[in-house]
Image 1 (cartoon, helix red, strand yellow):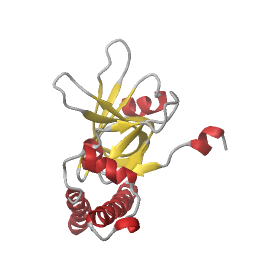
Image 2: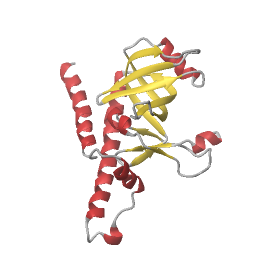
Image 3: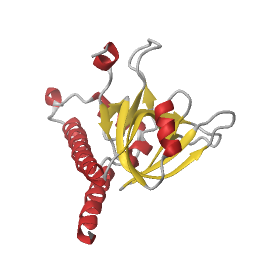
Length: 208
């Protein structure tokens, strides 16, 4: 195992709705090589993200060289993945894919601020793999579980923090604190996304 493998961050399972809201990024040291993190609204950090969905569209949006954009849809929204000359294997998958296909994407979150002042979030893929429906369904279930875990940890921190008798027993959750400071949407909104995602699987099974 290489040093890079030993130090590589865990890829977080995140639904598209939350990923696209993760507009605040930060580093935890001044070292120029320090990893860059996206702050998840449910109170965690993500240097890498693992997403699975339906690749519905690909397009070469490059000017002087190939730069491929893939649109990957999960039950809650859309991930946009961009791959060019520095991600040749991922770019090749997007170039050769025949949408619609299920894909698994591991990549780093990137933010971009256009002239209108908004912030868009996308994935710079490390890898893109064509997968089957069973893998997509399992990802939905596992991502639902991980999202609920983050929501519950956030709400536990929030309720104890607001309890005047909480005092020294308040759990430490620095990323929940950051999320509270930087995001306006109630964390409970993401529970509704979890319900929507899991119900979408039930609907598919009912029509199969």
